[in-house]
Amino acid sequence: MSKAGPTVAVLSERLLSVFPALDADDQRLSLALYRRLAEGAPVALPALAVELAMPREEVERRLDAWPGVYYDGERRVIGYWGLTIKPMTHRLRVDGRELFAWCAWDTLFLPALLGRMAGVSSVCRGNGEPVRLSVTPRGVESAEPEGIVVSFLIPGADAVRADVITSFCHYIHFFASAEVARPWLAQHPEAFLLGLDEAYEVGRRWTRARYPAALDLD
Image (cartoon, rainbow, N blue to C red):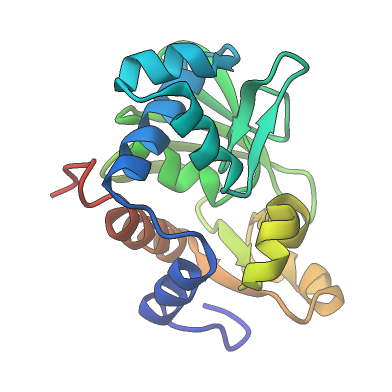
């Protein structure tokens, strides 16, 4: 759906080429970090290392090599690849805890990584209308309003490494409809629209390809 955007398959492959590849230990570390952070508190690296039976120095080395890892003043993780405990526009309710996502798309793939259903609250970027979703590890169960679309673009690998939030997340929004999105798209010709199901499917393919050793998503 959009202004000549790529197909879901092409978009998924191009996104995979932008973000760092994960070996089996990376996948374990990444998934453990997501799930610790989803408990709603900063994640201390020594505790994460113990959980994974991995030397702390190795945990630090791997995290330092990745873009999109954010720390507090005590070097505890407070934000990681789409998930944060810092208040932002996109809210997720998971197991009674309030969490936050960097962009609209994050709310669609995070439930699979967390292995939990998420109640999503956000707003339409075009008119401020509330957006509410129920997203499970298997799909979007409900969405209000019915015509939600997601703006998207394909960032460059260098831009993602420099700052994934400003180069990518700042362009990924919910819109109540394609019509509502038109003025924003006119100002951002590099962007295009995806239907909600398309955006979820891109996330599903991306997640399955990046975490084959750590997740059972069949």
